[in-house]
Length: 143
Length: 143
Length: 143
Length: 143
Image 1 (tube, each protein chain N blue to C red):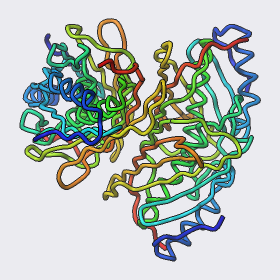
Image 2 (image 1 turned 120 degrees about the horizontal axis):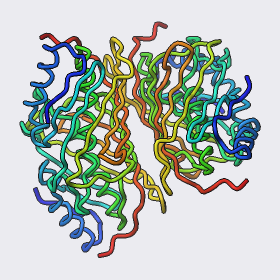
Image 3 (image 1 turned 180 degrees about the vertical axis):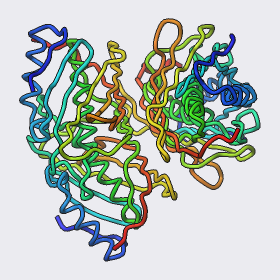
Image 4 (image 1 turned 60 degrees about the vertical axis):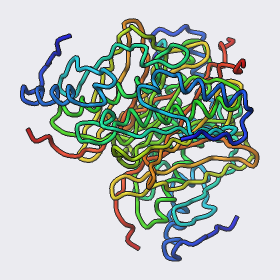
């Protein structure tokens, strides 16, 4: 799936795309970038058997990792880096293998110290998780 | 590392151990069981390069998955299953590759409907994350 | 301030309005109803000196109570009652005496067992808090 | 009930006690100090009719305010001030008028920037709420 840039500075877009592509944990989980806009990031994964629990449902850990990726990269579109301080996830529906999951992360407020974000994880039909993340601002991205 | 049973019924201990060993997502992340006691579970992982972000630190998604595994299996030691409803994680310190991480999960209250748990994720030296999880009781485990 | 009904059944609207008006804790904190719509509730308070901490800022407890009121009454507009299971609040900005605070609560998903909601607390200029609440469905409201 | 000092510097203990006694929001809710120790604070309230919802149960807002008070003052025993950034509460049991509620707050880690705490709210018989709070360190207390 080609990635979409909806208004982020080209050099910053390339930096974030490249960083996501070479992140070892995203490679292990097969998390990919879909779209970036100022203060917004969308990432996706097609869950497979490797992501399941013994009931055949997608493990919550994959969903929390996907949401964290969306929120952390939404912050990077503002030219700053953040480290996760708090992440609170509500699991609304179970996710199943083969149905692509997308996490849509948005920055609510980016302060000099604390950055507040939220994300929804959805499949084609329903909301899977509602997530709230607080990050600490670790400074501007040097390109 | 051999696993320790500190008071759980033998058939239930074997059921939980076997279930953890064949869970695809735990295999992908190399999460292993360390210890079970009534209302308590310890699981561990040795983080490697595949678990890192571009800064070389361990991704928060691994830590949240590990904590969820500890809390969910702490519930199973009581002979019941639960599905995660809410999971709230505070990240106290960064984790690094090569330093084993252990998640210690405890049941605070197991009701007929809601089950409340907490977990700490630690390495040999410090607390990495403090986690609070709420589960919905999906019924007794049939052995 | 007159209250607004944007689509809730009249008997249900009256029931919820009356209930809010006689709730002792809302009277103590001076929390009032502003608007109801299906799956949505707005409540407000004008913070005064009694709501402050020693720095003269509004105490977080008032803000959490206001958000909980918005989320719980958003659920009631669907003709069901819920009890709070989990409430997670991020404090984005400080609130000050004399500036009215409004909490806007929305139901994200109302299941037979779990109900998921969120709320924002705002003053006239900025977001004060972002809140996520999970409730247990205790059954339909008998009018 | 007399307050107990279990190891906090006398001037700091007096400063914290006096501050709690004159905090308008604590006066409105009748929240009192019970005990301070390094990194630990206990506060209490005897819930009355003014703290109830229409079902006659204690409103969750009182419980969240009490927990926030315990965590914020646990931080002050270390000679520093903090402002609440995130507060996550799980409601384990309902609380009733006339049964005193105590919140026991502990500092898990006090960093230069972020401070991590937890609290339990209990009545004489059971755990009412489990709470996790993250604060931003606003600097040392000048006595």
